[in-house]
Length: 259
Image (cartoon, rainbow, N blue to C red; front, side, top):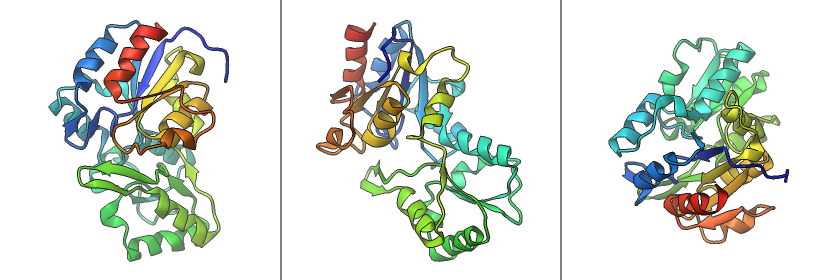
């Protein structure tokens, strides 16, 4: 890991770290207020593909989080940027609530496949249509490849197993744009004047949040909320910089030891 510099930025995961669906992690709102009192930039980075950025912001406001739209960087944004750069017409295998983030993108006669978390669309006809497009040479763009995520009723399959299934069936590899890709974390810092060695990431996913951030040169704090399961911190090397109970505890550590 690169030489540490003074901390300038804190990247914060949303689902599983600040909230689980429509319930905030206890004390998270107050902890965010305390963090805002520190001389650091805060950016919220999320792989959430279940809803558009606008809907996500409404959810956070309803939970009384003080967050503005320009502070949120999503994997949906990164995917749209790639679609525009490649100038392709995607078949969008994403939740209907996420479609607004692709407004204006041409999707008729698709020649690419974009896949996110889309439980209502993960059925045989849709997956087979994607399979046939890929066999014909269409690129596969995965918004992320999370294995699972946390819902109110327990853990649930993420898009990763479905992306991997399409890769296996067509002997192709997806371009992944969300966490844990290094480019995602660097893109989140673009224009901030902050280097990875001056940033720390807080999240509940050991591989995607913490491992991805640390591979990009940041520090990573793993919280035991959301999708966390016992011994997750042993799944990556190097291990997390810190593993703690929740977001408020992570904020306490940053304020006491890193500033």
